[in-house]
Amino acid sequence: MDRTESRLDEVAAFAAGAMPGSDFALPYSESEFLNQLGERVRASRMRCDMSRRELARKSGISERYIAQIEAGKGNVSIVLLLRLAFAIRGGQPHAA
Image (cartoon, rainbow, N blue to C red; front, side):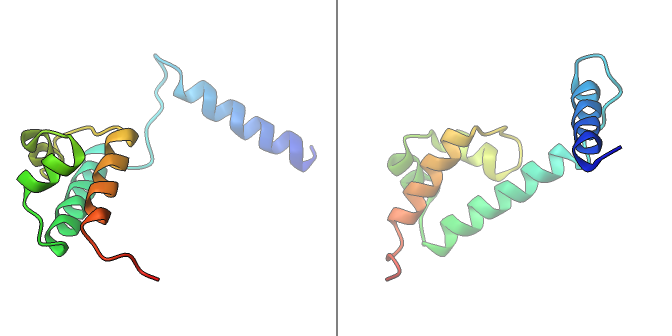
């Protein structure tokens, strides 16, 4: 079997395992990932000396939801992460 066929077999096996009803297990803990993400959001916000209220105002995301994200409870979308990052970065001086 050549390298391309081997890679295709790996992808097919992954896809089959990820289908509903399979016994597919993620190689990481989703809750641990969300906890680490929340810690990073909080640390970034605090480095900018920004309150949750200020971040909520700048990002358009409710203060309550930001608290949930920081606690590792909110399953945040990529779009909301982008809004948080932009709001936090807007509070920092831009590097040259």
